[in-house]
Amino acid sequence: MQKRVTASDVAELAGVSRTTVSFVLNNVPGMRISEDTRQKVLEAAKQLDYHPNISAQRLVTGQTRIIAYVERQTPEQAFSDAFLPQVLRGVHDAASASNFEVLFAPVPVENGAERCEYLLRGGHVDGIILSGPRSDDLELRELLERGAPLVIQGHWPGVATASVDIDNTEAA
Image: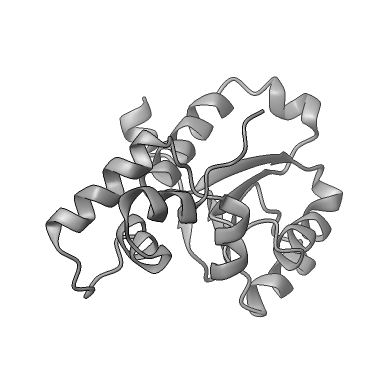
């Protein structure tokens, strides 16, 4: 495998500073960078086939840009669910539009809260879309009360949190 092209390589080819490359490639607003310089940087990045180092970006921003879709089923149940591919396609399309990736995690009901906490506290994901919460799931309620970034797919009676659901009328 070839040596990874860095922003410093792009800067050298474009004849600009590494900081200028960072500002251009990250579309940092308010920087006084001429259109000519901007084009030089973009052309150098293209010529070198530059791709940003996602791990480095995650260290700098503290964000993973990953959302977990946690399906409250065993893997066997989840992979035999006829509607799941359509749901995942919708989640993927929405996440991709905001430059997020999706991690699919089928989790048996009894391990839901533990797995969600692991994903969030371990910094594996920035948020979770949780499918199939149970009304008696106290651990998940506690996660929400502590401010965990959870969105519920479906309806969770008695819980005030963000949710998404299918339009059954349109789907019919």
